[in-house]
Picture 1 (cartoon, rainbow, N blue to C red):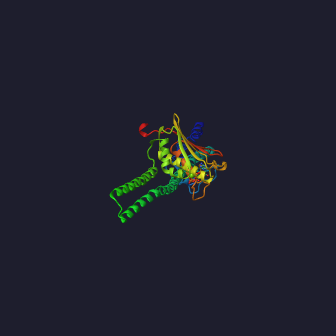
Picture 2 (picture 1 turned 45 degrees about the vertical axis):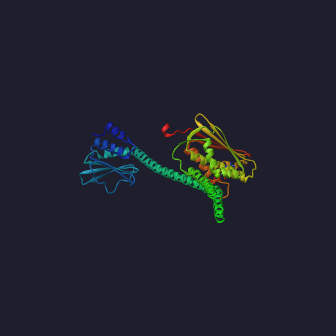
Picture 3 (picture 1 turned 90 degrees about the vertical axis):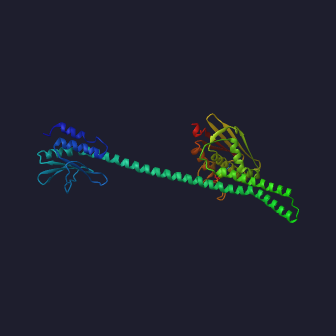
Length: 390
Ligand SMILES: Nc1ncnc2c1ncn2[C@@H]1O[C@H](COP(=O)(O)OP(=O)(O)OP(=O)(O)O)[C@@H](O)[C@H]1O
Ligand SMILES: [Mg+2]
């Protein structure tokens, strides 16, 4: 009754219809046992990692399974039931039958499907492994991404700390003069009191002078504090304002080192950006120019900042005449920890941070052109809009 072609065709076409091992084998089992009068079927995988599958009546697998991959065996169970055991490459297929004259024929037919079954099972296992690899790979990529973000954050902090150290030096410098003046006024007043030469008019004048100096001290602190306030919000600013903030911090140092600095072009044009971050970038570039002026002993020192408004962007160039960046150095300046300065003078994070701020945070572009006479940094910022203006 079972030696017809349509049975063979149905069984063979049930193989490999899914790439999920359990789904694929379930379909094979159902078709095989339904069309051949079986009552149960199982797949016992050799490898613990691959799950075993069963359909129909549950039964214990024979103690010794067939290991001959080309053929089949029939195990008798208590003289009433029989198990056809087909050995495949990765496991055994077991079919449970009641006593049946056609068992030999069924076994031969099933084992003739071995190659197709092996291929289908291999394909399912490969797909499963691929999916597992993908999950593992995704986890690794995510972990690496987290690590990178953490590293970047650490560098931002490190760079801010470096700038902060420099600034504390500048605050100390800017405070030295007014503190000396306050001390002098106090001493003079004490002296006048001792000589009984003090008058209330003179005292008022002295106290006003002290107040004036204290105001100056407090303004200096405000300038620095504003810079260190993290930029959480976009704000309206202009080239002129960036320039003013830059001078509030570096102006003294520029004067002391005889560096002329000026701002030209569309400086008054206002645009939306993370202002303090931009000031940090300008600060890094201008500090580097100052270092180069000193290192190369340039006499006529000049830095020019030019602002150009474009339809969909704001552009800046910061140019110095400090002797340029050597060819073998310029390719590396945006790399983290790259510095040509002695350890106490440079961390090598200034331009790396500037690059990160411009490209990652402000979605802009930063580049450099250098020659033996000087260096020009280019910054292009696409127009950003405040949330409420979107
Ligand atoms: N305007 C410039 N002229 C000459 N060399 C420059 C100029 N700007 C940058 N460089 C070179 O690029 C290097 C990297 O600059 P970067 O600002 O990243 O680090 P740094 O100044 O060495 O250290 P820091 O982290 O303190 O800023 C500098 O060490 C210097 O050699
Ligand atoms: Mg620097």
